[in-house]
Image (cartoon, rainbow, N blue to C red; front, side, top):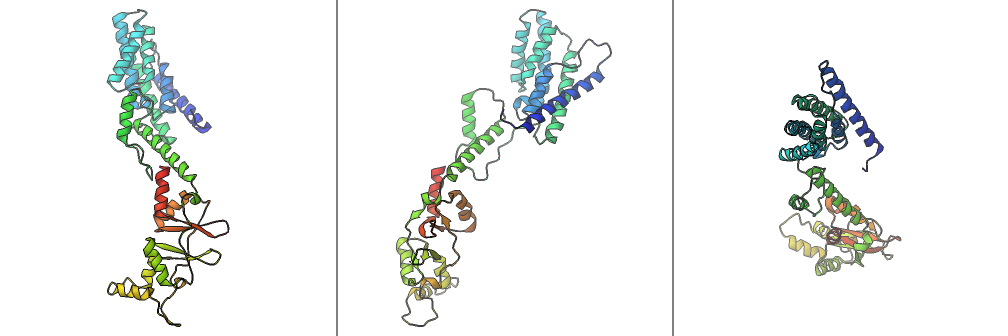
Length: 357
């Protein structure tokens, strides 16, 4: 029932138009002096389903047409078999439900059609065709046109639910089928809509949990760092010894001025040229011992100066596309004074994502 005013008006206007179309057309087709009515009351209930819940299995065209028409025929058969017996209506409703189950056209207003026939003592099979089938056909036709014009899929055939953009590792279609089998009750919602809603709820909860996580909660604290004048050999030794890929470069106030990564060393040693790359790398990191040289000697000469950083209170969810789409493997974290306090790596992010999931 949690729909806005626009949807409520859409449903109300649809019901009005659907019943109006059926009434006007069937009245114009009615034979003069015919004792049969040209509109049946259960059509109002069918209209609520067709226009109010067009995704419901109860509202699909075969359910409307088969449910109403077959139930009317069941009611007529009960009148012919039992006459005006007071229990004929109850038998007609029960039998109509069994028929609708058997032919996969369960439609709640069908029970009303069966009861209407027995209460009226109708025994002419023509009543099931006109007005019941005619009313139902016109209502379904109006429902198809109106629902599509107002952005609702109707008929709402079963189809596989589209997975969310980043599917959370929750349940599978087989899991849902197993639960529905244990539930063993009729649901007024199609299976694909149910699966889609559950997946969206799962994704919403996942995003909520991840959105509440801040960078300061998952970062690696007090990361190794170097200064502008740190010799290349010392920086290279830190990277190798601690098996890390990046070292933030800070000034005396621990404010970030750059970052040096394995890629920076590769670029400095021109490792794109495969021949003799090991010698070039050793030559790069080995101090020259000269006061003047064209070879880089300290970190500040090869570091990357443009550094993407994150604050401690930044939502971690905002960094997911940064890691996923830009090729970043590590992002330094700064406090309110712009000082280095931590670093977030891909491992930190994956760990946080697993906790949120």
